[in-house]
Length: 356
Image: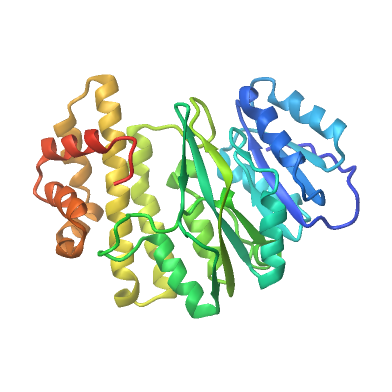
């Protein structure tokens, strides 16, 4: 693996290192990078990782570096989002670390606000709400309605479990988003414990394992009620593609999450959170399967049976107390448990593009 790094950078430690992996995003890169460089908090460094992009992105990265001495550039062979972020961590110098996907953009006061919260509460990590852009429409995901502070090891552990998945009676499968791009992370924790991302080519989703590992060593969390990050659904990106193989690999992610939880909690403490996470992964996988079957005119019933017959999903479907769930979840997962593929298909089609 080869790379070249711009070393012409001021020696003073920046408050935040912003890591931006770049791959085939010519259309969106200016919007992304400019939103970071134009932050009201100026004391930042911006690390662009050209992940072997075959278009004009490498040259664009070099131009940003020439125009702004806060920009550093790594050119490397294509290795995927997780490894690109790891390359940025290797050279970062900031007090806190932030991540941005190169086809998204952020509000100009995001880092000033989050850094202020981090200093005020001596936070190890500061999360924020998110805005989503899709088909010309904007929606805001509000995980918290007012700023919330989780202080102390026990509070952080409780938050960690809820981040994995809520208890059966909760109305949403996801209580707190796991994505790293809506947060600031204290870099000393990452360096001391050598926390890194897995490859999404191996486990599909690398953010939750990273967060679990980070929160293992954290004592203070702040969750901002403001939505600073703008997540955009685009046709091409590092992390927004789908295939049967991708959803097959999610079983590996589920097993990894279980092993991480086993290190921190007893089975009686983590099991209901873990089981609901498995059900959520199954729902996401089935939704992906359905889209692929519709696009490629494939047999949905056959794919449904294949997906649900996996031993990890079958175990949870048999054991989970679905009677404690809200009605919509009780019906949906009950249909899955009983093998009603066409009822599941109907609910997925009804709820496609919406949150269950």
